[in-house]
Image 1: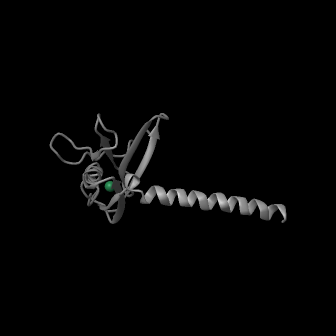
Image 2: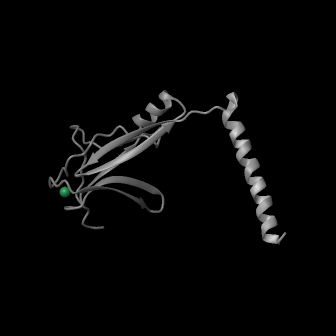
Image 3: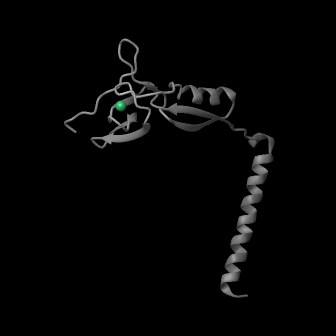
Length: 140
Ligand SMILES: [Zn+2]
């Protein structure tokens, strides 16, 4: 048998054993594992974004969904344009920002994170409750 064929046979045997092990693990009652998924759609300006969250059960899946419970954003709070997009940036190599950006006037609406859980995001608001749109900083 040529060497490459021998290698192939060995590899294929290992592969089959691995598949069989996984199959047994997945069908054994102790290892039976469900994942629930939920798809969320968010409208940001004229664009629609789809996110999939998942958990081990209904409660976990809904908890993941809650972490993305920011509202749709119809238009820029400064110029009224619906030409918005999502964007992320890292400042000073360590501060991660995610925001809604107006592609017309470059205004920025930053997502905040809760202190105890940086996976939970919300849109920043002013004291009056309106979304905290910030004009493009001219100095940048
Ligand atoms: Zn704008």
